[in-house]
Length: 146
Image 1 (tube, rainbow, N blue to C red):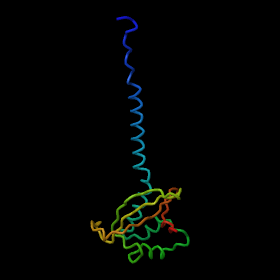
Image 2 (tube, rainbow, N blue to C red; image 1 turned 90 degrees about the horizontal axis):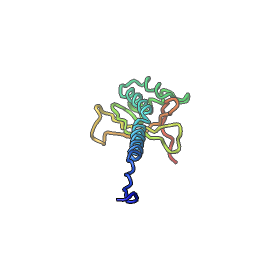
Image 3 (spheres, rainbow, N blue to C red; image 1 turned 180 degrees about the vertical axis):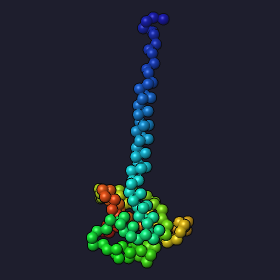
Image 4 (cartoon, rainbow, N blue to C red; image 1 turned 135 degrees about the vertical axis):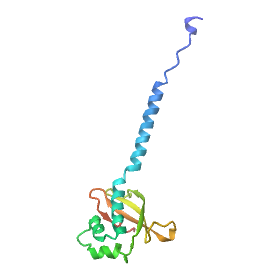
């Protein structure tokens, strides 16, 4: 065997493992962020619907952060026992996402029922979407679709 016939040493696998490790860390961080990115908005919606389910309309109205032209009577007409969305006896947060054309709000989809505990029968469940403002956590109905 001559010097020219010598085998080259195998390249180190360390850089490959480092790159793979960094990619796994970034993927795990992205998945964790994706899972918790709307937790604050979901919590606000949950507090609001908990107040409604408990029958505490004053607290729910306060959590709504109403505009000056949205009176408590208007709120009761929408969310009260005989309101458009009411009565709310149980609820379940379904999902949250940022609408495409909104940079300030998160749309929280909530499954609402007039019976407690939350039913398995889908005919007793309504889907309600409310918008939560990211800056001040005020609630609002989504704008009408055109």
